[in-house]
Length: 199
Image 1 (cartoon, helix red, strand yellow):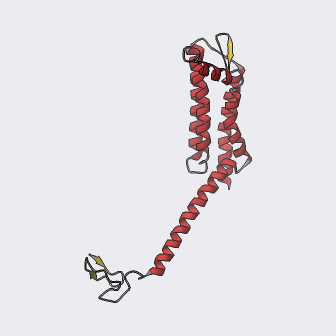
Image 2 (tube, rainbow, N blue to C red):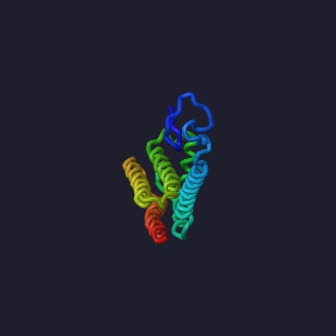
Image 3 (cartoon, one colour):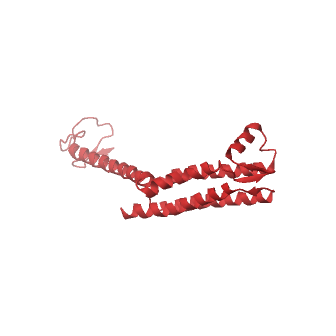
């Protein structure tokens, strides 16, 4: 059972004619222009929402010098892993050495190398997550989210290094380079947020 959109009179369940028997209104095309207008307005609102999202992502990723620097700084800690980061068993440990040990099967038999490997994975994982999360810096809680993710990455990197030291490893200068770059990234979150909010 349905009603006529014009007069409101009830129509039979099996009434399939095109016009209302009470007022003669065309049931299929009644108020068709307004329906088209409403559909057009809805489509425009959706297009505007998508455009705002894309503009926000662009501003977050490459909208300012600080945003571009931050994007580079997400990747620099990974590059810094090529430097000697730890010392283990009398040798320096860097990303290339860990990769060779993993392919040779020597990492997981040595607790110290396993911890170094975990720390390197931590740096790479948090860098990649930070890149994705930073695309939404323009949102209401963008700055808080970015700072929390980056701070968690610093805490995890530093926490695993304590385990490395406890297992008999040592620090090399690459560790401090990685840590400094991660801290610079946090500072750039604030610079990017300030620029976005100023626009």
